[in-house]
Image 1 (tube, rainbow, N blue to C red):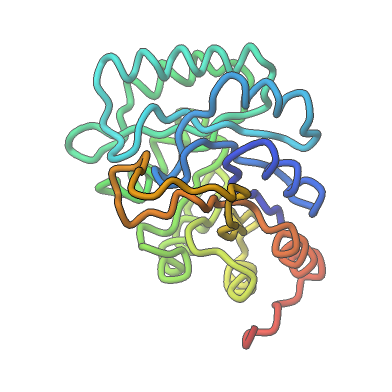
Image 2 (cartoon, helix red, strand yellow; image 1 turned 30 degrees about the vertical axis):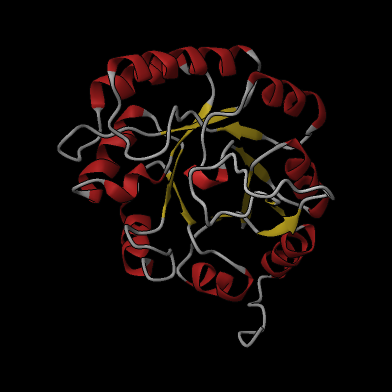
Length: 251
């Protein structure tokens, strides 16, 4: 069973690689759920990370119905990521009615060249998952990242099982709330790939902290912390998967 780790920077990607991850989904902005990484991040990842890295192409947070300008940005990013030599990318878009935006998806797929394309959790916001599965199969999507249209993949197990039984092409990859203590549930239904952030919040190294000034509109957000991959968790998850045995359920 393959373990994909969501990483919000090159340091996290290197940590995940050392811990045994099979693939990296590379993003920026954890608070937005993942946005397109900067050119500098992409270049360093190509230079330093040996396992497959699939950058996300997402121009903003929020929903997955994009304006003309946002779509033009996505096309430029797809072409750049393709030309940089990445083996895959992660995309997703819906129309205003919650269906797969087929005309735009076709354009992005044409631009993707030989990259393996993952359709991300925009899938979990679509109207009809089985119709979407058929459409994404026809588009040539390599895998679908999904929680089974639930807040967590564990709750979405019934739909994940149904998608696995129905798919004629795309790999069904469970994501959202996948952790060490529930890996066995995804193994038991026959999934071959899971996606996890396997992360934790770490404190900033800043000693001086300016009182009364914040760079974030959310006054409750602690700017002197950041989210990063926990290598020990990745290693433990990969070990559990490779043994084919569930991790102790009480852990």
